[in-house]
Image 1 (tube, rainbow, N blue to C red):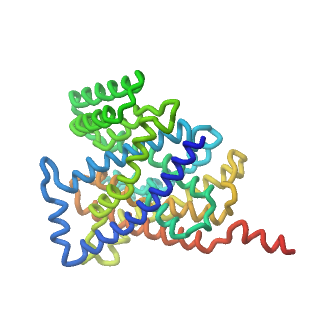
Image 2 (tube, rainbow, N blue to C red):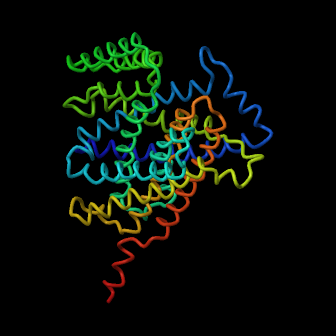
Image 3 (cartoon, rainbow, N blue to C red):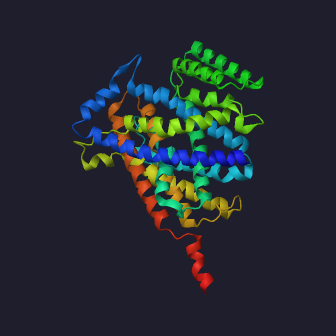
Length: 390
């Protein structure tokens, strides 16, 4: 579908620039947290803005818009994009599942059964698509388009798994009244789609009300974004549908503003006073190795297995070394890992700070290794040139 292809192209462009901005914002946060600006940085994030702090508004309200975009992307890809047919979705879905399971197993092995740490098993399970595409942009045109598309679809499937984990694992006490209100609002939004309402304002207003109800219900408020996306209709005229228009409008806002703000608000771990041994404590080491070792092992191993068994074909025009480079980039867990870390260790700031160290180490190691492999890996043209000249 031309509409689906152009949507993917816009998404790649938007996510790539957003990834570069996210990298810059994360770097700025680390500088601020480890300089004379640290008190001002912390005071800014802790400042009250109505009923919540600035950091809570970013993490629970603005990130709901991020999850709304994630939900729209998932729905778009399943209905008319790269996950529409089983033969297209088989490889990225299996790779994403293996790429979530393997890091969790690595983390749990290093947590050594410590009950205080086991709740963080999902931290290294997610891939940060914007950060990964930002690194991919630095490689340039050496990476075939099929691999960029593979990375995007794996990350979208990965996001779906992360959303399910957040909803099922990190939900605490529930408020039945607020939950009932959320269900009623969701039903009204679904009905609007069924009767053919195409006004974006109706869905945006409903999404805001749904966010308020979910926030009060005990389910993490960002899940409201995915729920709202599920009922935004796509319709037969895809280019003019509410889903397409909302996705097109949200992508730059999320990529160029919300995600950099999130990175700036959450990546600022104070490194002063931390000895080298801090990185080798079970929590940060489990996260770092989960991202760097578990992700590449799970994804690359799943692709080799699927191709070897004849379940799927290797991405066209790509060498195995390039596929391995993409698997390394999937170890960049930054945004979603920081988000899940804050949920897993809520109100336990020392553990959240330790988790950030592991996330930064694992993500930066994956980014650097993935960049080097993709930058210097020979592509198909390089491999075939000597044969052709012979």
